[in-house]
Image 1 (cartoon, rainbow, N blue to C red):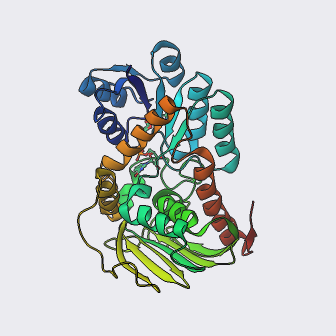
Image 2: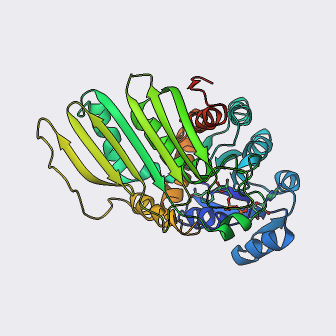
Length: 355
Ligand SMILES: NC(=O)c1ccc[n+]([C@@H]2O[C@H](COP(=O)([O-])OP(=O)(O)OC[C@H]3O[C@@H](n4cnc5c(N)ncnc54)[C@H](O)[C@@H]3O)[C@@H](O)[C@H]2O)c1
């Protein structure tokens, strides 16, 4: 089997997790080049991993020989860089969120489709045992009619975190605050569990940070197409940072997940053991999804397992010519939910979907 060759654009905080993930598959994958507009960042990464450094993505795309471009630049340029890669015939692994506007997300989805390349958007928490088990139970109908779902992200970010990059905390490049940057994983999970959104109403504020344009606390109520009701809250003000939660309540069962692990599950037919569930995560990806909650207070504490699972899925999708697990339309749906929340909070009006 020939190896898939990877190159990375954006050598900041998250790029090392992508490199560690690629290196886990030494028989199937290899890193060949890195690019950052800051020469020192590109050279440091290139030297560490023995690959070629570029400071211009267009130059890397025309000169380096590779198959997959990992987009690890600020959120508001994901589509721009991904489209460049797709048009050069590269498969795309894109950091979350897919981008910060639906127009940009659509441009990336369309560029990948028309150039016949795969698109995998990172959403590593989807690999947790808790979410995977919940998905299975929902597909089996074990919870009965789903009435209510709730996701909470009560995290903490210092002022220093927002000051660490000019793009952080801006609408243009971060696309939002606690919900877009930190909360996108859990907004995605709530929507994945509850189904398509019909409308949202929200309130947001910036209370505990300076020099940021975006919200650091937001709460939304959601009406799903199924008729079910949901709530979604996200904050980076909650010292010292608490575990994320996802709760889904139905007429025949309830599942409560904390930090990617099922804390409690109960069914009317008593066919399953009643929680609290414990035990070790079943896979490395699941362990990483649990560890992802370490980022409740430390943005650099991202484990490699979830990213490795995404890299493996992309490679398998290329070889089997199938759709990726976290494809463009899925990632777009999470983005649309977040943008609906922001539009409602800005206008004071309930927002109807599709936007
Ligand atoms: N999945 C996760 O858990 C996770 C964790 C952290 C960050 N992220 C995402 O990864 C992305 C990057 O975040 P980060 O914290 O690594 O940011 P960062 O600021 O640390 O790194 C971004 C890098 O991109 C470079 N860059 C910007 N524009 C460029 C261009 N035109 N060409 C080449 N390089 C360019 C910057 O110089 C910088 O080194 C964000 O979208 C963020 O949401 C995801």
